[in-house]
Image (cartoon, rainbow over all chains, first blue to last red; front, side, top):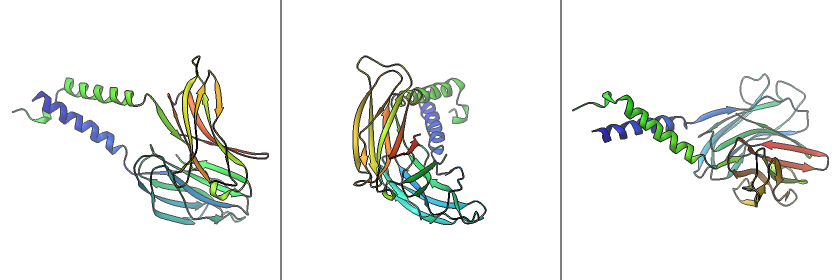
Length: 126
Length: 132
């Protein structure tokens, strides 16, 4: 009986651990890039199993995303790029930050990037 | 027959100890990955993985493995680095004219004294992408 209770408790604790790895939404800090660059959200799967991610690129004041990309399937060590938005002078439409929904934070990474010529800005999501 | 609701404190404590011990054992070596980098949007400059050891070393150095991946998951460069005390080392740089790096992966003894980054260099332009 003790052995049964031990394994029951083990399953209970393992269940809590598994729950901690449920789908998570992570966001970057906001940027306000200069006009003329290209911005997008990026996601990477560093794990051993495939996973699906969704990306949303927001501006400063817009209530809804400037661009969304859903159902991005990433295999092990693969990266995927979200829609590209040109940076502008208009703070309402200038891309600022990313929201990424990923299977877990342990294996997946997400960033907001701006490329302007050879200049690159990468803002991590946490 | 006793129900599972009567799970006693000793059993639960034993289980927690077993789980914690296995978790500690599993974290003996850690793999850090940098946040994704837009290598496919850049056509000049280079990218390399860098590792720092903020702790002590060994006579032969502490072994760390670094890989640069492109967005398809292909390894563009792979290095085994041997870290001395308070040391930082670079892996092989890849050329953005020919390949499109997306992230670095670093396997190291721990993530308290060791850390890893992706470094982009293009003339006077220098960007550092941290890992987690």
